[in-house]
Amino acid sequence: KPLSEIYSQKPKIRFPEAEVIYLGIQHEREKLYNRINQRVDQMIGDGLIEEVESLLPFQSLKSLQTVGYTELFRFFAGEIKKQEAIDLIKQHTRNYAKRQITYFSNRLPTTWIDADQWPQYLLNFEL
Image (cartoon, rainbow, N blue to C red; front, side, top):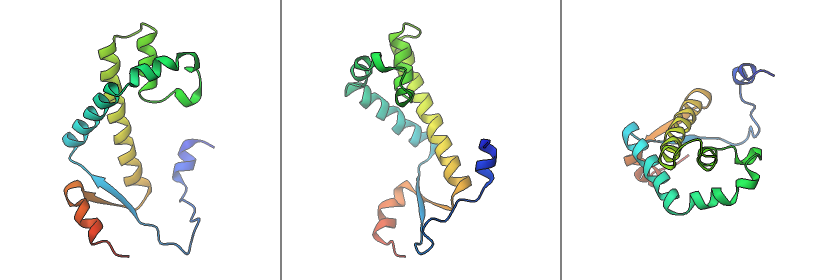
């Protein structure tokens, strides 16, 4: 089926007896992007480059065609410099986050809670 046909369908209700609530944490875009950039820097510091290098023999596996791995595989292939790979990981992660927000906003009845209000929201949460 074409993706457009799949997305145009209403989601199936798998558990009609359950009340499902979709919640999302909403960050200001600049704060979200800064958090993503810091997280990528932390992953690099924690050994992501060495991890990807150890996976070079398996880079053709579909499961490794993901953000972070594909950019570093390109670095190890000599196609791009290390800093460019890191910058692309940050950019692609930001793009992915934006697609997730769009998906949840358009496909699911998501209630977005401001990040600063999230702890209080959870403390007061009732069905």
